[in-house]
Image 1 (cartoon, rainbow, N blue to C red):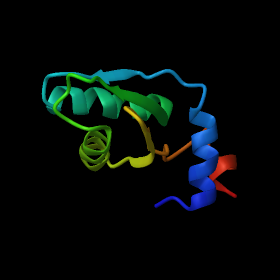
Image 2: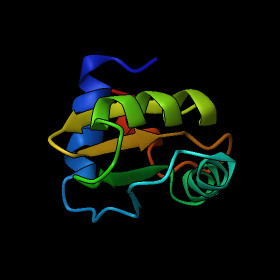
Image 3: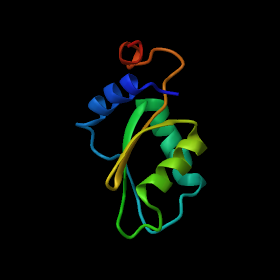
Image 4: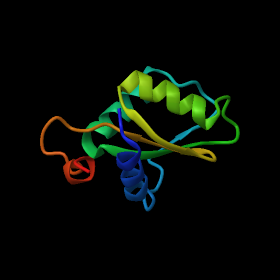
Length: 99
């Protein structure tokens, strides 16, 4: 669980990021979940976008994917959301989370 200061620092770090995945008309299935998990393992902090044609709201998609991957939902704003999953070793965000 992230504190409010950690969440604020991660939001600041995610601000310049472009969305890595777009969630469209299809369901959030095992393939998408596995791809998001792989991306989180590589990058730790990712931004995703929910298209207008999707049957999910950004909050619903964030909750489903964060629960499926074990990640923390950092922020949901509009149709975009940010997920964070800290690496066990050599995390780039150790300094941010130490606050």
